[in-house]
Amino acid sequence: MTRAAIVGAGPAGAAVSEVLSAAGIAHALYDEQPRAGGNIGRRRFDAPALPPEEVPLCDYRGGRRVLRVSNDRSVEWDDGAAIRRQGYEAVFLCAGAYDGMLPRPGRFASWTSAGALQALLKGQGVVPEGRVLICGAGPFLHVVAADLVAAGVAVVAVVDALPRRAYVNLLPRAMAVPANVKMMIDVQRRLHRAGVALRFGHRVVALGARDAVLDDGTRYDFDHVGISDWFAPQTQLARSAGCTQAWSATGRYFHTRVDADYRSDVPGIFVCGEGAGVRGGPHARHSGLIAALAWLAERGTPAPERYGLAALRAQALGLTRFGQALEEAATSREPRLDDDGWACACERVPVARVRQAVADGLEDLSSIKIVTRCGMGPCQGRYCEPLVGRLVAEGGTAPRSALTQKVLARPLAVRELIGG
Ligand SMILES: Cc1cc2nc3c(=O)[nH]c(=O)nc-3n(C[C@H](O)[C@H](O)[C@H](O)COP(=O)(O)OP(=O)(O)OC[C@H]3O[C@@H](n4cnc5c(N)ncnc54)[C@H](O)[C@@H]3O)c2cc1C
Image (cartoon, rainbow, N blue to C red; front, side, top):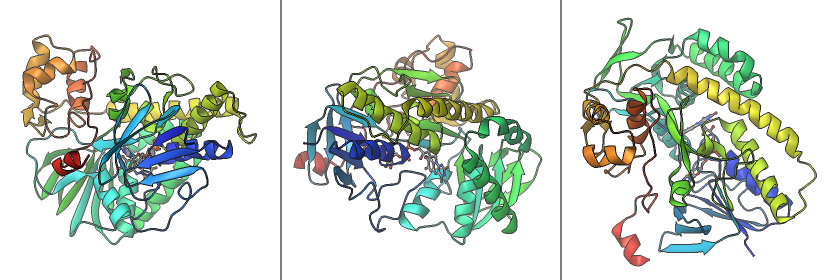
């Protein structure tokens, strides 16, 4: 009998699956991507299966979007033909994070998130034509640029708001993730060899459809720009289950509140990986191992001997501190949001409109949503919530509550609803 469900087959979900398989527990692993791997390990849709796919006791449900999780631990998913529902003893939400951009005046078809460029490359083997500029803040920019260069793309520059000094200052905490340090050094070498301009400690201050001007006056022409200013956790499913959300002052997003074993406050629902705070791949794996071991202990199932829970918890703490320091280094360097940019691109709500609502005394996102329409568009607040939260926090107050999640967590075609 399938006893547990995992949503998300990235490092967090794969780690939960690994422990449950070793403990002899049958489980379902849902991912909307055809192949397991998540964001770091994303593989082409037509790649051969790898663990945790086709592993005994793991029922890998690839290409399946989970639309809702309820507080009775039932999972609703879209199997392509209809919407199905199944209840479980435990649900592990390992849905990852997404990246976005700060508001800038205008919005052109040549702009996308850097994450989208990488996802298209890794998942579909598709790259943009012409010159590409990568900008924003953090090490992810360099990884995306190096992947694009390796795929033959002409990357003109990486513009990273973090100065080199910020990376050096992070080194003591980065000792928790030596592989990431090594990867960053390797990526720098590859970009340097490819002749990509590496502009640490700079920002794009004017971005057009085909050109960008930096704070030191340098201009770059491009055909496509990939922007990654911030990351935020995918919390929609945890919200649909009623798990409490908390505002992160360092990350400037809402995340699901969990205990040291990644338990949410809804019984039987664990939130691992980026959903509990954006902390990187090694942390995601640790959180999955810890949550699965904690659940086995709760139900009295002997844990596989190879894992030491106490050591994992201590390592996870070090990884959490590194992740927090990195995100703080990025968010603390953000410029004041531009009044003329859109806080909500779906409903085209300018930043100035939200600032006015905050000045009028609104501190919770649901009230701001009613007054401004931020969060009412097709993305249902995924992209504007972190921005509106920033605008509330400008006054020194954390936003009071996150947006409530309506079903469904993913867009559906009408025919799929009728079919169900
Ligand atoms: C676009 C992007 C690219 C990244 N690339 C890199 C990289 O190259 N190198 C690096 O070091 N870090 C990268 N990161 C950071 C990295 O994602 C994390 O550190 C790590 O992968 C987090 O692991 P996770 O298991 O928490 O989530 P993820 O690896 O993100 O896995 C989450 C999985 O959940 C699935 N999912 C989400 N919602 C649903 C749903 N409703 N129904 C079904 N499935 C769902 C997704 O398809 C995904 O496969 C990237 C982040 C993003 C957002």
